[in-house]
Length: 415
Image (cartoon, rainbow, N blue to C red; front, side, top):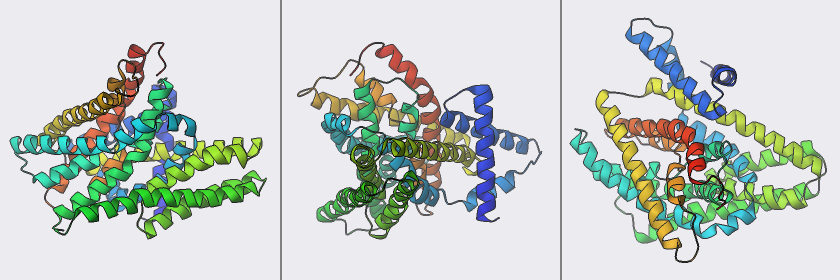
């Protein structure tokens, strides 16, 4: 099947599921599309069990043709991160810088070890003996919150501004440390025995610091170009070139493309919006990137729902996945609670902040993409399946109930 045909089929399904959601379910678009996609997948599987084949093999073959890891981490993610960062106020981000820094660094590392250790014990108990190193690898890919899922859901809930900035800011920046930890553990798991403290530090500088510097450099270049143009069509093209060219360059020089896009998006969305754009350009640019964000989000979450057709589910793996949900939530609560306890010595937190930060720490497509990037080792299928179960639970259950939890805890309080 040709790439254009696959893309056309996926877009038609996304449009159909979006229409059904809008007319019948009225869920937030991303959640609704993913829910309908899951129901669609379950329906195909159930009919297959009954001996009625309505194309399960063909759909599964199409999904296997799509490299989810490549499509997300080296395709859609650049647009989604830039669009999300463009709409975050830099002053709000600065006011929460210590909370975001601690949650995005120490919080991820602590969660990685808690998830890895408890998952190792649970999988062994359930009859899935998995090496401790691969359990830590699972902890590294599931601990960072997903900026695409988080920002997409935060748009639909009336969360207090301070907490919204903490959650969104953390999700935008914790990918850097999460990817570094994931790459280090993956190299160790695959037999790379030459990992040193210096090597870890160098990898962090290359990925996180290098990505930030690259984002600043390309963002400033685009900003200077935007200042010299007063034509919204040209300015939209400049931002598209910034995203596509910048992410490709980050891949080429082996630095963090996600962090580069976040920094560039913050620069264009704040400094660029204030000093380099007319009112017409601001409005048109916002409309363009909001539409891009909505389309790609709907497409991504539809793909996540369809991925169930190619996941190796068994009753035992389902139990392992349910246990992993509880482990991941506990690790999130423990890491967030520890960070809030430390920060309370120099800044106040509203009651219930730990609950909101814990339940609002959504996992999404990035975790699935990282799991699928693991080479063909015996542990891979277990890790991929339990990751998928956690992501589905996180987006549907946590995403649908976050607003209700916020209203219960913060009916009138602004953090």
